[in-house]
Amino acid sequence: MSREKSNRQQTIKKEVLIEGAGIHTGVNVSVRLKPAPEDSGIIFLRTDIKGAPAIPASVDFVSACRRGTTLSNGAAEVMTVEHLMAALYGLEIDNLYIEISSKELPACDGSSAVYTEKIMQAGIKRQEAERLYCALDSPLVYTENDAAVIAIPSDRLSVNAVFDYEEGLPGGQYASVDISVESFLSEMAGARTFCFEKDIEHIKKQGLGLGGSEKNTLVIRGNSVKNTPLRFDNECVRHKILDFTGDLSLLGCPLKARIFIIKTGHQVNINFTKKLKKYFMDKKLPQKKIDSEGILKILPHRYPFLMVDTITVGADGKTATGYKNVTSNEPFFKGHFPDTPIFPSTLIIEFMAQSSAVLFLSGKKSEDTLAYFMIIEDASFFGKITPPEILRAEVELIQMRGTRGKVQGTAYKENGEITAQAQFMFALVER
Image 1 (tube, rainbow, N blue to C red):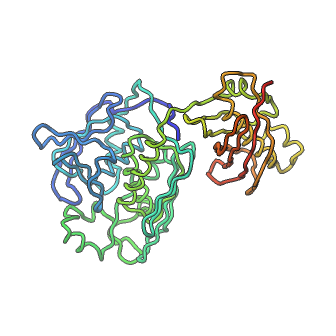
Image 2 (image 1 turned 90 degrees about the vertical axis):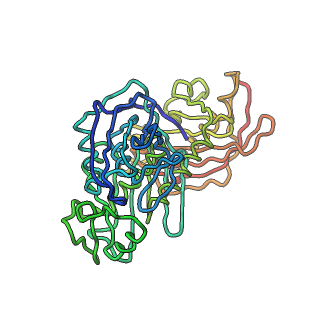
């Protein structure tokens, strides 16, 4: 886990007014989006209630997930927040006050398009405070019945969705989006919510869908949408990604991960986000990030045999994450092999071994200590590495006796696939 500084926080330049009826309550509502100071986060304010109670847009305040996500703080609640929250996440808005005159946000056209257009018209203001990102350092999986969310480390957020309804979905059941401002605007914002015609009466008997209409909902009969042309061939699945992004935004920190979602709904989305937040809270320990200059002070290796570019050492001194940027400029590719460059498996082992050496030596006061590689056990290799690639080594101290230690190492590709595993024994000696 890491929290990385990148870019700046943002809010909007001027106030935005959006009006309409809630898709479940059918009640007309006015929503005013207002600029907020840096480090404020996203705050809902129920202006129709005395004192305008505040409801933070946080997974800690989720109170219900019935056909939408509801936030509550005491008696104050706000329903169906996911489409607006997805728009704020997609446009990289960090700080905002949202004044709402009733308990449900307007459905608009059933997508995030209206929210997005209004925000873009108002303009986005860059603030001075740094924007913090949460980045996974190991895979995280949540499953519930036949639904699943799988997240693996990545340098950006991407969401891949697979759905399989017995009724079928028009135009395909798969979508993949690398989420950025540009892709959100072109590939996600306009994807509308949907329901199956056979479920409409049941939804209304639950007291929901009272504001639903053919203007804000795709109605599916059989394998086709009966009421309007699709905006995308796979619009329904894209909307699932939109909903997931809106729910994920309640983490409170933009995420860097490659995510696969299978048959998810709001409850699964929220349960995953809660698990994700616990993951970061449990690992919220001070970490020591060592850059290339710092590594040169610790390891005796030099180009072309220095394999670690950067490394992060855990606060407990027992774990570390090393990174190696594999490019076509590596000198050994001239002979391994000229027409088909393959990163040698022995150097993957060396990469993990050097990461382990930094783990051992980073806490030493003396710079005259060396870590000698003694024994390798249970080495396994999975697939080949070709440039360009970012290798990641996860190493963990599993035994330490005097000046000798044993480390478990695992190397991963950028997409999270394991490429090698091994155990190492080291001896610490004075130069």
